[in-house]
Image: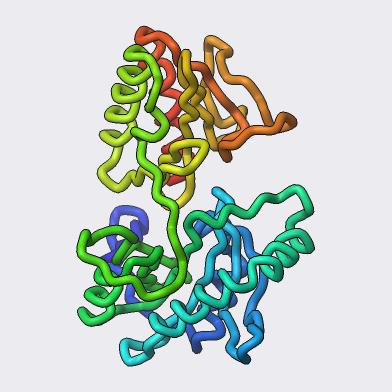
Length: 292
């Protein structure tokens, strides 16, 4: 991907460069893990009981465990190694939860519905992409490019659930939820409200991903920018931005940072009437733009 730097009126094409080695790549990601991927850093080179070492362990904003492995060149085969670590993680939930408590605090909840494996490399071959699309696991391939002036570009190559024909490779039983699970038994008004705001959110940008979890539905690019909690008489929309970053002229946002809640956003706004959709959507768009 060509990246250009604007210097006064002249565009200069930046050249692609490389990290010195895999360790430098790993250190850059680990030191900026939350900013780049929305993942809280837990440990580096974590030694497992079978002698292997997990490159990076983290916890995402939805509480899911994350294993990150780095791939220096196309010949490195870290997919099977990563799957092996996923199995180890499921067999050692207690060790991981203790690590989370020690690093992030005792009140942090780990959600085991969808543990993730992220592979990070400068390039992938077609065999890598085919293999991941055939495997029934939460494996994500992310490509990075390092340019002059220390500019780092990261993009998704393969995301989970891209193929319906998948082969089970580990003992993990993923719990899959759909929007219909949240809408079951809700009134026609609530269903229509959700469908309307859902369509409008997804139309903001084709890269927006909808992630359905047990207690809420999240919308994200790399990190969540909003979540919807569906209730019997309306929707609570949680916003992942600070109050000073959002224009809210009608003062409808509620700060719940000191109140227990399932979603990741510490601001929330109520949606129970169709005439409020445009106002809520404007708030959501601001949060989305803040994440770009």
